[in-house]
Length: 290
Image 1 (cartoon, rainbow, N blue to C red):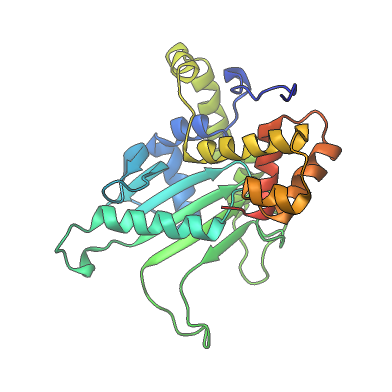
Image 2 (cartoon, rainbow, N blue to C red):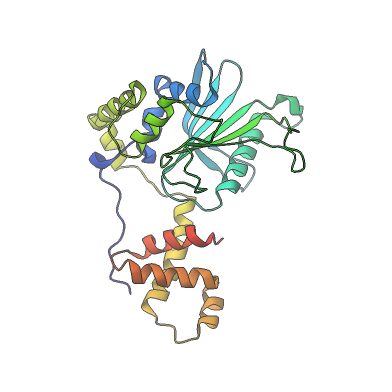
């Protein structure tokens, strides 16, 4: 059996705005999330309602539901889903797709006309650069592959805010407020009114004993963690090397890819202090295994 240390829940006093619990708690207050939405969409919002912090959307009988960090609707019937992605996630594009379909199913009841679908924005805040362009923001909408001037007009937009961003896309500059917010979320001192607002909110949460108790009793187990657990078991077997077979046979026995096996071995060699979950998390992200 592996003797490496096991991952434990992050101490409450060490939480930052990019930790899911803190992000959900702070953004559940309309005065905290509305400025973010206004900066991203580029217009004022008269009124918003946070429908449910960490809303769970069930997509059908015996199907996988999803938990949304912050689920918001404004007075013009536009839906906003804001998600903190504090670690490199597998299948980022497919995650957008799944969130979008879940939102749409939640809005439209059986027999409703498609016109009942609302405009929607799904916003992922990532603490890593998913595309390597160093842009502060990556906006997406559905366009024709043959002619980008032809838009699908499905009224669904997806936006990535990159805390590791260092530059604008020429001709598509973002505001200084967005840059200051992302800098704060990347661990730097708050240098704008909005960043200071968020920082003060984080401090108030940490001073709240009820929140502290809530966090300490919170079950952070999720679908992703169950997947992580499955692959951690595979990492343990690879690490202990107790299966006297060839790599080809090991791949078949563990039902993994050659890339996953190679990535696990490299992570173990380069990071001897990592536990099995750390190695599995890294290898899953790097190889996008199922």
